[in-house]
Length: 155
Image (cartoon, rainbow, N blue to C red; front, top):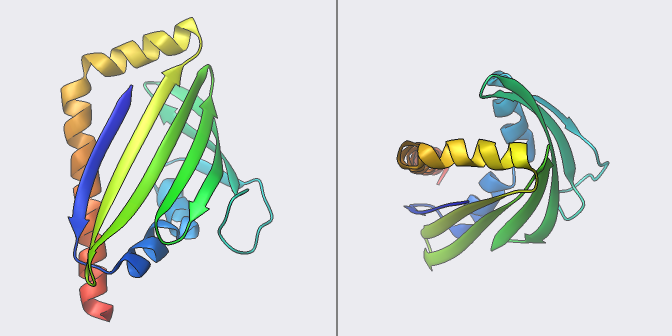
């Protein structure tokens, strides 16, 4: 099951990459939303090999997910692999400069169930596909707007 969206953002690609690779900021956001996040690596700078153990509530159950950063091509893309109770996934963050001050961000999430219970979970998500797609695209658009707002204050 794939979710994919793209957003054109009024900010240079280097600024955008700095924002999407600010993992400490994303970790703080996850903690505020009730997730437990712990880093599994000891890297000082962002790059391939970073890993996280994340626990969060979803559909009435506590889920555990391991996430690894497997590709880090600054300022163009990042690829994450994840594993969660019978499910594997990939998340691709792809940036493309449209001009000196405009960047297209493409975000793609691909979930693959590996067990029967994970297939049932994905099937229930598929039933709500329309609303899930809308929420996903809205969140990415809100993220883009927030980046534009921050960039307009510092740029």
